[in-house]
Length: 359
Image 1 (cartoon, rainbow, N blue to C red):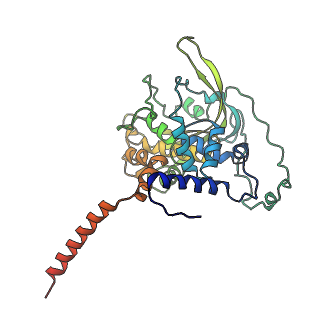
Image 2: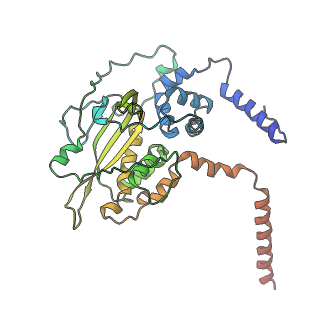
């Protein structure tokens, strides 16, 4: 039912009523619970957690339900809610080498220490619609899952290259990293800030940029050094205690991309790495993020930056889907005065144009 009304409060009330009706859909069908969304649409939940920058599966599922499956709107809802929460402190850096592995693959080494763990992925499945899923409760049970590795030290594959001196070292810094949730984006942006922005950036945008680097817009010759997905321990160190305490585990996806590097007068030819770390199971975004991370490192490696993916301003200002949504969708708001001004201007210009050409 569509109702045409005037008045802000009345219009908002009708909008809420319409959204509630649309969200519920056909009342003859059972309503989806947030628990069902969390478990059965887990990859959508993971994406909303990452782009909403809030690692809470229940809240992400609720946001998806409220947004009727619109992941960008759901991320917006989740970020808005997160701003209302108190901040108790910062977690210590997670140790991905001690990850409880669910999936770990490398395209650079067939036999790598710790082995390949294929894990949950669509990569080895036929892309055919499974119509058995339409018959509720009749779908064939999935095959037995590969056993999960126990948590333990599993160094990154790039460490093998580093031992031979073939991998350029990542320069460590004792400086406190900036907090993009508390401070506005500013340039020049160091790598820590760039990685923060991309970690909660739009997957599709980063995927397109990552793809562009492989098509010549960034001079990338990448190899997947390693992709791993699993659970990592989150620890905080309260000042009153003076030691770290474990507050829980979260699922993350990590990618280290190996790229060629011709070297400079100061550095020999060697490999360099791009890095991506994303909350949840989302290796596609982790891979895209690692490709763009490497592209953004061009100036520090003495390379000429010519492509969009190598421009920090272009990448970071446009990768945030919540901010992008605001700028695009504000065009739906009333612009009557602005347009009348433009209308009068174009009429005057046209009148002069015709007058100059009149016989």
